[in-house]
Image 1 (cartoon, rainbow, N blue to C red):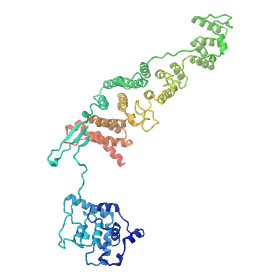
Image 2 (image 1 turned 120 degrees about the vertical axis):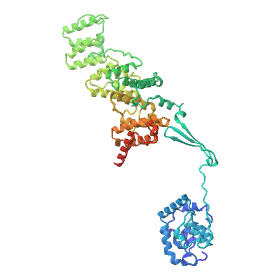
Image 3 (image 1 turned 90 degrees about the horizontal axis):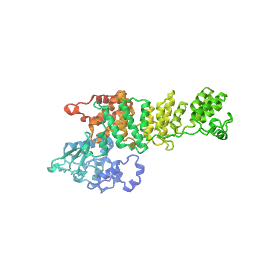
Image 4 (image 1 turned 30 degrees about the horizontal axis):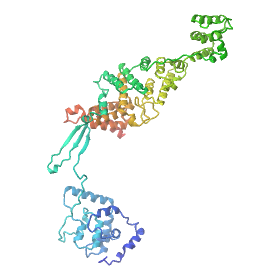
Length: 606
């Protein structure tokens, strides 16, 4: 460069670029792209090579701080130390912080080194080096200015104009936000700086959404149901309205949904208690029609006769035992008399066959019961073979025989018929083996669930006292009443099924006041969030109180995420509490919220 004859400066730009791979292990380029972007808007930024600047900065930093006429060799070491320390991220962060604080406080900034070197008449190389070292007009190093100060030379100070920040929005616009109290806040696009008054509008979401189906569904439900001022007649009325409005009784699914609502009415009327005969009566009332089950003759092989022998023993043929020709049509008395004659001669086996052939099952069963067990089982099998396959008597006899009824494995099929009479006969005639009875009902529910009859399956699960489970556990049989947790969550957690499950929980609380469904509390929180979204914050806060009460009765640490989410929602909705509205000057919080927050903090500490 002109004016400098030091042999150490005899490096060309080309040789530096070529040897940079060897020299880069000592000085690595930092934020080249960022520095280049910052310098694009500054004057004289394109007059020198970027790599040349970096070279001079890396190997000769003393040149930028040496006043004219001073020996460079004397200041090289101190300048290098200052440069190394200035290259650290900590110093860079401090300078940025000092710059921001200075701008915020409104204090005048010191003139930049760029402007000082430019006005002092330094060479273009010195100016460009200083521009790379202090490439922002906001940076000012008091250490560097200590060696040479433009103000000491009597030069005038010229301020650098601040860069214009582009507006985020070109025109005034409407600002919208939602409030926790069920309000929509609108900030109108006025210009207060031009004398216009600021205009803010508050709208109630309940008023805006009054025509929506979801809000009407939320308003029709008398929840939360654990309120002291709630009467169970209101709950029963709601269930009957759901039966009349949302259940299509012409379809099987509509009848199953109606059955679940009727079960809620029955439980609410009887304070959560029920017996098998009550459920059986409900099942038979809800049957669309009483099916006629056809009887049939017992199979010939079941009574020990071949087809030829069976034809020979039909009415009108010669009886080889008595030598008489029986009449074509025999009365009941004649049939019994023939049964008695066979016993006169000691023909027990023939008497059993005669009784079975002529439907004297009472005589046949009593006689065989006094004989060996094999004979009794043979007669009993012959009797059950006369019943239709889908006859509920078949279900009862198979259950009494210690077997899972066939109806539990085949119900739900259109060829099989209605499933309700079979469940009714199992509930009303429980056998001594309660485990068998339980497995039979659960098997029927699994079969119905496999065929897509979710409401019918859940009815069976309620009769078998199956506990409620969780959405993420697919092995659980029931999560929300009338909804399958194998489908998507948005389709699964509908408002109707949440309301129906809450009614079941309420019915159980009529019998056991401290009862609650722990897996169901998360859906109460979801329901409370929907209430807040539709402008009903007071009801949402009441749901939060119920959930907190249930969690405090247990250990909130067992469900920490649920407890924290309830606390967050309650803290936003607590202004909707009428007690706080009456005394706004005091910082009041419900006791349950204070206790829940303390439990959450204790859990975090643990």
